[in-house]
Image (cartoon, rainbow, N blue to C red; front, side, top):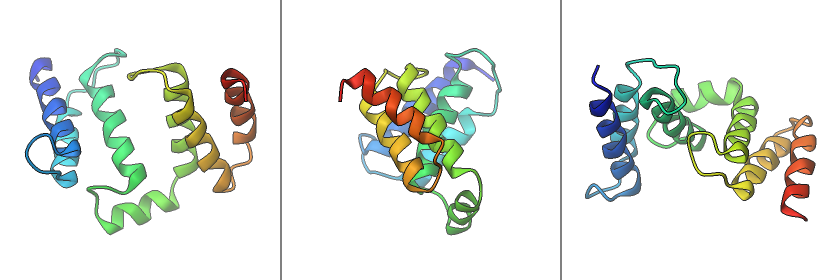
Length: 130
């Protein structure tokens, strides 16, 4: 698949997600992110990873996905996903670094009962000089 086409799909999906494309439509955004993931590419800046990141955010929020998908995600490794999202924000992988967002994801994971997030919370608070 053409990388530029995949990147265009991602930008269009972002437009539907934010409402810039005329109307906010999370289902359409999910569909477009999924199409952009078709060509797996292991490079950090690949459309595959970018689409996966944005799709993961929508899954975590339960936006644009069916009730069955939400239940499946809740039964699965949601805490691991929250921790991974925290690390993505902490390290600035695929997106701009945002320590406050990272902290929010780690706290949410801890509130879900994942006590291993405590170390991540302490580390981020030190970086933010809490």
